[in-house]
Length: 263
Image 1 (cartoon, helix red, strand yellow):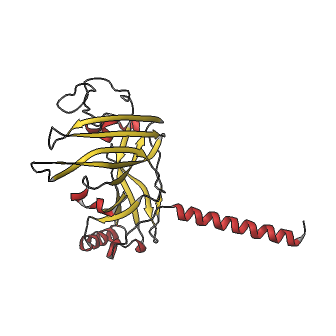
Image 2 (cartoon, rainbow, N blue to C red):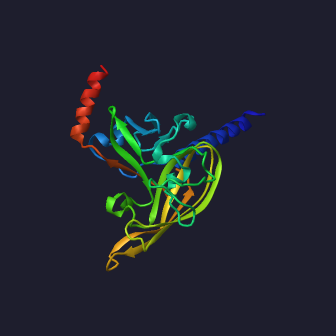
Image 3 (cartoon, rainbow, N blue to C red):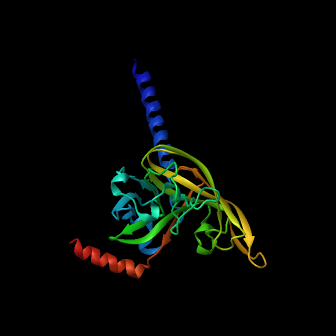
């Protein structure tokens, strides 16, 4: 092979690697908003954390100085953590218990019959907390629309919310659950799921697809149909927002204490 051909081959290889690197970086999720002060991600030091059923904190990744989210989701033995009474049944992770026509339940909402998922161990994780200077200062919430972050809008706006879920096995879950509403027993909410779980971490989409009105003059709004499906954190439909839970004064106090402890 002559020198010219070697040079051409080297250029093609370099361009291919560069393109691949750009595509990989572009596919990583990025925070949509940039907060001021100590929560400005360009200052660095942002770790993403959550808690297992055992109460142990685990790191789920970090946000770099450009706002790109890097997940580092650890595998763990979820069965060894046991069960808690609030999350004993797999279906309860998606609030698909107390379904009409599917058997009786006790006062705590636990079914008085065996379900097909009796021995499944799983944990649905809420939005990830941002840890800095040893304390939780904010959280990152994945949604399809920023308006869903407003508390009053959470169950009143058509859109998607996303969650990480850890499960002990691969599992195809397809079911529908119809429940009476707490607001008015004359109304019902339909929750459906069509998810192909893989063992370990799964990214779940909760879609509010239909609303209904209730109240004396139909002035109140609540969900009518909710659909759970599988998604990907790299999906263009997912928007990642940082939400503050601590002001800068408290964060700076935590920073001072953190620096004193780590001298």
